[in-house]
Amino acid sequence: MQGNASPVVGIIANPLSARDIRRIMTHASNLQTSDRVGIVLRVMGGLRSSGIKRVLIMPDRSGFGALLMRKLHQASHDAGKDFPDVECLDFDPISTVDDTLRAARLMREAGVKAIVVLGGDGTHRAVVRECGDIAIAGLSTGTNNAFPEHREPTIVGLAVGLYASGQLSAAEALVPNKVLDVLLESRQGKPSVRDIAIVDVAISSDHYIGARALWKPENLYAAYVTFASPESIGLSSIAGLLLPVGRQEKGGVSIRMAPSGTQPAYHLRAPILPGMMANVPILRWGHMQEGQSFAVDLKSGVVALDGERELTFDEGSKVSVTLRGNAFSTVDVAHCMHIAAENGLFRSIAPTTC
Image (cartoon, rainbow, N blue to C red; front, side, top):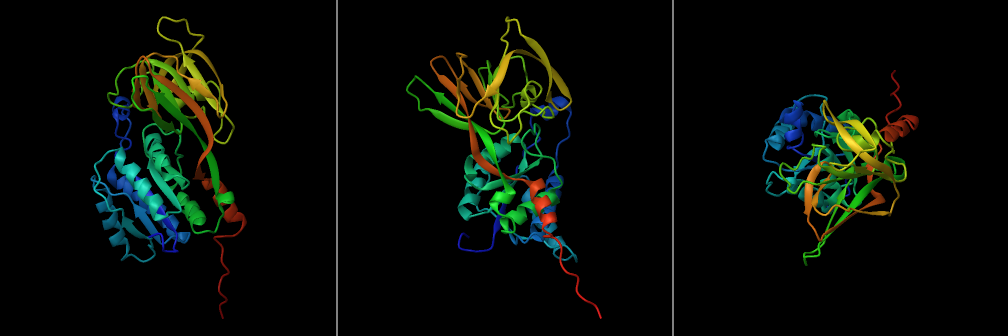
């Protein structure tokens, strides 16, 4: 596939996003398979209009891929409906995050120019871990969506296609993003563990992974975020309501919650789930500088990455969190479309009629 000069775009649609316990607790709606297929078809319509002829997709066991292929077959007989050729990656899915990790890795190896991601913060984090220097464009279909934006999929497809086809340069189309590097060092002779978060790292005094999704504020000990918007939902909303920091601004935010039995400096009401506010006891907060390492002084607990419990640590272990800039690139959809409009990339001279 790498020998083909035709630009290729990858699409990773997580069939499990928006189906965790947080949706049940808040009565938020689930995105059905047919809805995901409709989103991908609109993305591909935009991609084809921008000159993309080939797309790679992730296999799944949910019926998403089969329904997508049926819809594409039906569309092939309809006038005016033109989509890229679709190839499904060749591996057996197991319906875990490993599918997303493997798909991103294979797409990078196949030489895709960009990857469109459908999912929440956790799905985007998994893609970023494996995609290397491949640019991504996110569409929000998860539960807590601080990172992916809500946009019309057709416009995302158009913008990605303009970049992937070479009509816009990387300097014109892409913006850099920050990550949080997490290091867990054990004094028990176990190997160190390294991971990343693209939005937030939360430290909890819990001692188990459980349902993975972290949504109860009672046991929160500390939080670190790459960017903080007052319009966010989830754990990053805590930082957004204390010290807003933009995606492209330097630095992040660190927050220390007040432990049980300690007098907090403030009580903050934050939307930690769709439709659900919580009172969070705050001890202090401040800016994180890029490259500055924050040591976690809790003896034991759980590290949640982008809202999901991932790592446990006990006494004798050391956990540190460091903000890193220019870690990966995303397609700046709004800027791409503005440049396209200014340069007339969607205009053509009307043919002269006799």
